[in-house]
Length: 210
Image (cartoon, rainbow, N blue to C red):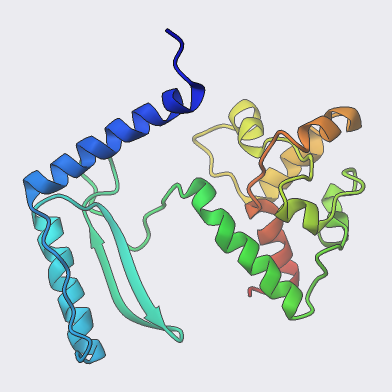
C-alpha cells in the first residue's frame, strides 16, 4: 500500500507532538495567569514564579527576555546549555536559531530601507563589494530567497573547521572562493533557501543597526 508523501512527512512530527503533549500532562505544567489589572512589576513577578516552577519540574530549557522600549523588564535562564546538563544556561549562551531568525533578518532589512539606508532593489555588491562576482543579485532577491547564492551551510560543512568560530567575514570569503558557475547559480535560485544573516550583518555594519 502506498502512503501519501505528505502523510509520511507529517507522521514523525505528529508523533513528536503527541509524546510532548503526553509529557506535559504527566508533568502537570501549571497555567500562567496574570490579572489584567496587575502592574508591570506584578506581571513580571508572576512570570518569574511560573518559570521557576517549570525549571524546578525540568519541563523548560531556554531563555526568556521581556523588554519594553529598550528597557529589560525580565530576563530568566532555565536549564542547561549542553545536552549533558553540566553547564547552566546563561545570558551569553549561543542558540542555533536556524530559520527562526529569517523573519527578524527580513524585518531588519526593511527597517534599513524605510530609514533610507538602502534600497530593496540595490545590487548586493553595492553594499557587500566582496560579492561583486555575483552579478545581478539584489537585496530583493535575498528577501525572496531567489538570489542563487550557494548554500552557506553546505559551504561551511565542506570547507570550514567546525572547531573554529565562523564569522561573517569568513562566510563572505567562502562565498567568494567557492562561487559556482552562473548557470548553476540560476538553477539554484529556485531550489536553495539562503538565510539572510550573512548579507544582513554586512549591511548593518555599513548602514547601522536597525
